Length: 570
Image (tube, rainbow, N blue to C red):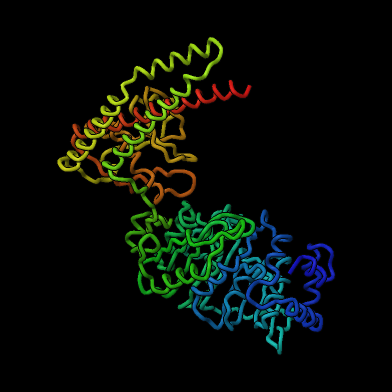
């Protein structure tokens, strides 16, 4: 429905008037029934949250309350994951998208703080003729301010304000709480046995609240930001306690940009009080989406693939994995999904033989293009300065031995191919933990590091491995790798890390910065014999020099082109 139709239904001119006008109609049975019938007349079919998009575009408070209302595809995913239950508690229910998306005849207990959201939540439940209790509640403080009771009737639920409600354990909790909302940590029986969530991020306070209300066979399904999987300090300790208590059943990463008001990627974390094993299922589903305008949407096929994998707990290459408790403990209880599901795709390269042929062919084509250009330049005339430069240019290229240079390049490539084959077949290589062969330290302010130091940016990292060409101080945003003994050459170390680092960081980096602690997990393959290290480093240096030469030549040609363009179009 359009904004104009919605405003006319409620007799309002501005969207901010909606909550008060709607609540007044809902608490009057005749007005409520009339309003619901009008919604049906306008095409409402019960498939989704009837006013969510209208409400969040005009009334959602993202800056203070971190309100991000749940998109339809995510509601459907939660419905497909959750078991059937007589009662479902929806914590931080918003306008009710998760509850109405469950598509089952359960009794709902929906809890929401915002007075602006509650009237829309009541309407969503009433339109579907649900039995429910809606609590205006501050979940973090565990304080209920008002109770609404919805009772199924002939067509639409009747709504009344009541003084009390019955709180019982439930088999299913669902929740999309405000992400990383600030709060004032305070001890509470709900949090007993756990650290308190930090003041800057209450995510785990919401989780522990839900777990405290589960039955002995209950499951909770939380939509949470990625940071809860790897942030340290109090959150790291809570995460460890949850894992040790065998309460985390599955972690599912989802695509970014699913929500209207934020592009952050989120995860579904499934908690269970009745696990039969100590392992955890990880599903990497961030690539399962279609673009719909500015937002990403998971299709029914995507949702079904995730749900089938969850229920079967199957291992699918580059999509899902079941990690043992021991593996998770070895990873310091970090639940970042790339550590357990390797989705990194290495670039496929042609064979060295094909690559050599391609480079030779490219060089011949360059030479031909140069000859064609020379023929064209002979006919161009300009002022004395231009003619002199042109004549020098033509003389230079006329003196070049094109065939000889191409043959030399071919021989160079052939020798490289032969030496590479020899090293691969004769040299012994090993794979070891990186910290067995090098030390790592953060750069110390004022310290001069020697030429040959290998280093990487830690803060707001670009992931690039660098090589220090001369003695110099380094900024403290870097960290340095240094061989433990002379059996590892620094130039060779640079090339090892340059090759290995991208795939490693794809699995172990969390956020924008590199935590140096992750390097204890890094394994590298290398040749321990110094003679092979030196040969490989010299070969790669030669290739890099050739690349730099060609790049510089390209830059010179760009200037040459610009010179002519400026002369032709003054």
